[in-house]
Length: 245
Image (cartoon, rainbow, N blue to C red; front, side, top):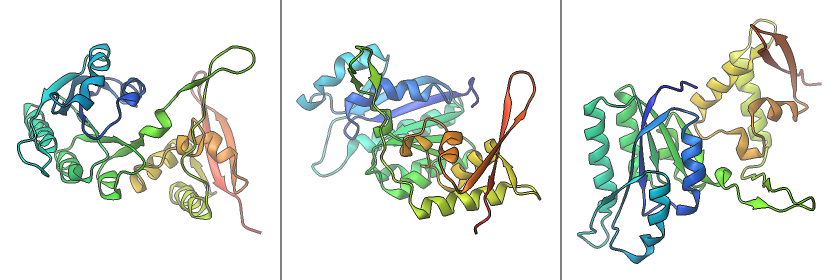
């Protein structure tokens, strides 16, 4: 990923549980530098009081938005207006829109039309229109790294699995490998990963309990993996569909 990309992180405080914030901000740094970090909500409401220390620890600026009318989400409107102001300021190269609300679908589409990269972050319940409007969508559930205490006393992270590897997933992977392959059927794993995200922005190997895409493919008998020497200490990973018997 491009490390020097500047990102605006805009969080729907009415829609996102506070317990995910630390892991979420760590995840965002994989894709760029969060130079603008704002969270929107009516901070006079008691249920948002638990955010105070979390915001201070992560240098996130709270934006006050009163709920002027019952049944209308003023927080969404404020977040959308701010996003457009930031877009026209030309201070960032991309956005992280943190919400499980489909109301941000049009915003994500508009930002991408302007040539900016858009990362969506939300819970598994997020409607599909918002997911596919983003370049990449990350489920918060896979970032929930509560620690267990095993017998040896050393804390370990729980591996969260939120999706099953179904025949539909296998077909999707096989088609993606075929689309990215050369005349011999081999496809560079990096190209396969990029193509998968273009087809399905919410596809993430962590959804299936694997930290990376290569271990996911290695676990499936429908694929062959080949490793080649690259420049320096780096190795190039290639994948090919096994022929059906």
